[in-house]
Length: 171
Image (cartoon, rainbow, N blue to C red; front, top):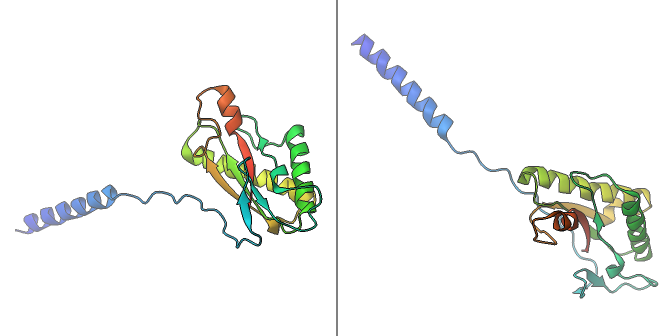
């Protein structure tokens, strides 16, 4: 009888352990964009960027903000990328009320998790450089879309090069 109780106990512990191990784990949450209230009325332009009505903006408009591209598996800013970011910084300085979201993107190669992290590093690198050029970080936010929003849906190097980018979207 005592041996039977021990066997039941061992069986119950084993069964409970197997059930606990077999439970599904929750998937990692996807990053959400930082939300900030819009300060100016926005309208969509042909270029896909948003145009804003700001007095004293001079000769710059939001459509002057230009995307930047990155090398494969990299978030390093090339000299061409730095030049484009400097132009974007000038646009933001000329339009004091402008706030932007910098969206990091990747090509389809690599895991979803890796590409989300790389996209975030690309957006952060662009934001950090623009901060060194005098744009307040409070006027910029970042988000990564990884490989989820390709500019070119192709599956070759030419398409992948277009998809490795950071976009500037007015908020």
